Image (cartoon, rainbow, N blue to C red):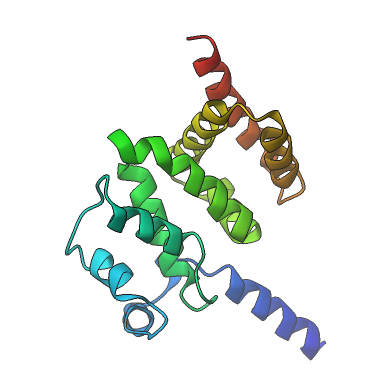
Length: 172
């Protein structure tokens, strides 16, 4: 019985999101050696995203957190970028939205499906749909669809949003 409780607690810990973490623990994560100076400076709002190499490096880092300890911070910051992306950054954020789901599917999708912020789910669907439409690679669309459908419950509704975006651009 104790083992089952321990496993349940470990599973829950893996799905701990930034807004679930107390301020003291957030401070510990931010000051961790695992958090790069670039990510820390972005978190501290010392600079803003724009169409430059620093932003691209930030996005690459955010979609591949070095450990579960810092994953909540990285995911939180990626969601911030996703929410404010416009112009050239909005055109490339879909590529990174796909990567963050590929790298962290069982962490990202439950959050998107259960979040009260449905705008975030729609933004992911839009950015991914746009990226898949631009690439026009049917194999990539099929592979990504399979990844979503084999993940947590709720994938079919997410795919509907992605397909809606693909069809919207396809009609233009």
